[in-house]
Length: 210
Image (cartoon, rainbow, N blue to C red):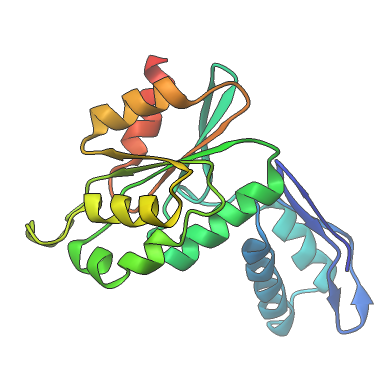
C-alpha cells in the first residue's frame, strides 16, 4: 500500500479482505500510529462496520491530548508536547518527527518516576538519537517519594557520554527549561516537550512569553 508522510500526518491506502479502500489521511504522524489505525480498522471491520465507512472515520479522527499535540508557533518554530515516558515511545515519536519534519529537533525530556528512571536509565539514554538538541529536567516524582540516589543528572551524563558531540543540557527546574528553549530554539526548529509529568507547562509558558 502507498504510504506518504507530511507535517500534517500520514496517508496510506489500506487493503481489507483484498478490497482496496480509499486513501486514509490520518491526522497523526508516525508508522506506529498508522499501525494503530490499521488495527482499529481491522477491529471495526470485524465488528461489522463497512470497510469504506471505517476508513473514512479514521481520517476524521483528530488525535488525543498530549500525543504530539501542537501547542503553538513562536519566532518561526513549532512547539509540540508529547506524553511519551518510556524509551520505546520516545524513540518512535522522535523517529516519526524526523520523518515528517524537515527541521532541527529540540527535545526536552522530564523523566517520570524515580523507579522507572532507574530501571530504564540506559534505554532512556539511547532514546534521543533523532534529536539534535536535548534538555533533561528533573524527575517528576508523581506517587513516589523523592530519592537521593537517582536523579536526572545521571541520565544527562549518560547521554553526554554516549553522544559527546551533541548539545545536551541539564535543566533542574521549569524556569531553566523555558529559558533554555527560548535561548536555543531558532526559526524552523521543532521544539518537543516530552514526559508524563508537568513538562507541558514549559511548552505553554514558552508560547505565552516569547
